[in-house]
Image (cartoon, rainbow, N blue to C red; front, side, top):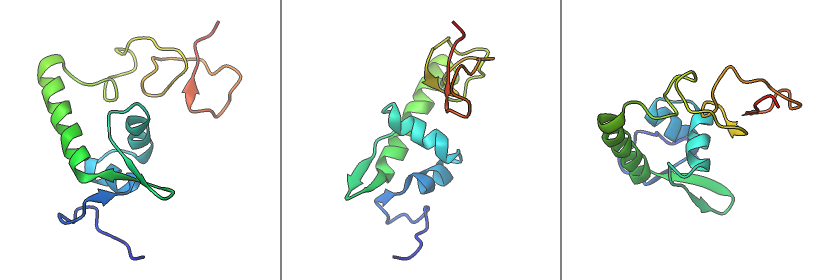
Length: 111
């Protein structure tokens, strides 16, 4: 299996890493978007792939929402985001305290 160009206009499905490159964001952010349903994916065997049309749809939603309300919570500064407990960063607000899960991707409020 050869390396494919994420910008190939004929490609219908791309990997999350290629989707990150196409969107100009980090791979972990793509996985956050996939996890909360803002970016669609499909499975073929064990591979998780992102339809190119889903990326275009997501960008369209971002443009529409930002015209209406400003930046989304993925791009929003942590000090401006609403407080959420046990959600992946950057959706959690800061400065959060890590409690009992050093190195974990989840931020937890102090109790």
